[in-house]
Length: 217
Image 1 (tube, rainbow, N blue to C red):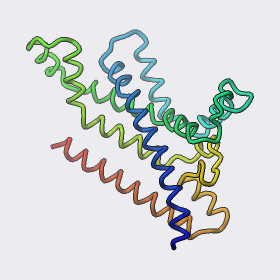
Image 2: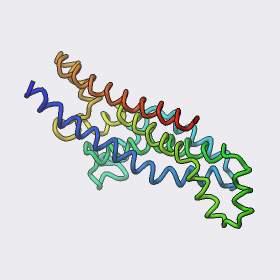
Image 3: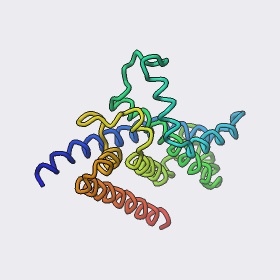
Image 4: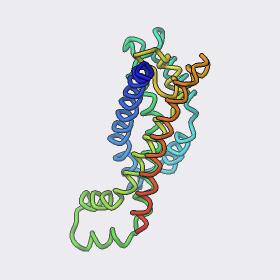
């Protein structure tokens, strides 16, 4: 049991580090971008929305393939030497998470009642104050965006396997480790990792349900 714990803990810690870092970066970038699209009336807005929704459906293996070609030695960004590192896996998860954060934020601010905007205008609020207040009113949806991105990151396997390489004590995450240990026939470790992953998934879903209940109230 101690040996199994020693094998599982580095995998779990790396998975949490990569996923949480990717979610934080995605929220820092995605919430302002989603707010700009949701509030804005710029030309080409419908195209931007279509690109966001298309990004939500992008297969992870496609992202992994493109990043592999870009980060390989002969690739455009090969000099960074990110291939088979945690940085590459974080980058892949940011690319996969970002459309969800942008899309949920965009939808949240679009569905706010127009009466609230008019009320703020009548009180003399500036455009920036109005947007900030409306964004604060959407805080539950913003949290939902972060939790959704975290759930996607924790369950991702295709892209991180392609550009991370599943290297022991270096780029091995829970999803890729489950795949490897199953192929090796080490079902004890695979089941233990699966139980940890399912527990995390359950916690994330409970957070989503609790947030939806609070939002509906």
